[in-house]
Image (cartoon, rainbow over all chains, first blue to last red):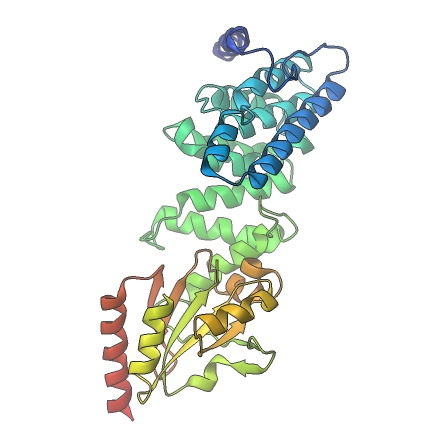
Length: 271
Length: 105
């Protein structure tokens, strides 16, 4: 009963939101959606958003003065103008993979639009209807990124829910890794309940989810391995692991070549 | 970082001390100019063409730059800093370990 009522409230929210939204941006009318083929409408809306963003960044890079840049910033594509379109498609296609994909876009754009309400709505519907959808592989990362907006333990609860109910695959592995990262703290006692849970999650991710990538294309299995390696081998008091590699001229050398000297090992980059 | 590192290299030239870098620039050619301009004389491993996702930083679980490890003369990690802890803290830690290295022979 509660779920139903909350869902109705969600719909009301989305509708109210749409009436307030401006209708046209940059000469396009991005929010009008004819509900004939939601999957196609969704692809079109995504393409329109991506095109306006690309055009904006291209123009921005061409701008030469700060005044030109400021003037352009006023014309920057606004996520809030596009959000209602995604909500409308998601509701028209309720229950389908198209809806799952549209709600994922709502989660992606809501922070840019500074919208604090829609993430909770989208998350609730995604967890209720779409746990097995292939469209939600990025959901764990989004939840982690939105943990402050979602508030009090909601992110943790959502990740635990996903971990328990998503079929074995990227969503489940991603939820484990995101949960482990969320629970981890600098001074977390490894012998505590929480410390043990974080280690167990990292061990599972390292063992079973090497082929799952995070938002930046890195394997979460490798990242979990890195976490475990750091805890086991990179703490003050432990012998530094060997590094064998090439220098910037292509000549091979080893960290242990410097035994006998104090070494400041500096992970650096020129950016 | 560069000016402080240059001064460490110069000041501790005769001491048992070395800076070893792990460089995470994907584009080595572009880096050559920087090495000359900034007078970076200390040796660095190259983290490979994948830049910050390269094998050494991944294995050492480095996800912020700079990350610094201070290793004593026996090869034991003694300090780890995410970002520079400031020149004073670094100098003090290095000098302590250099003194130990000289005592230990």
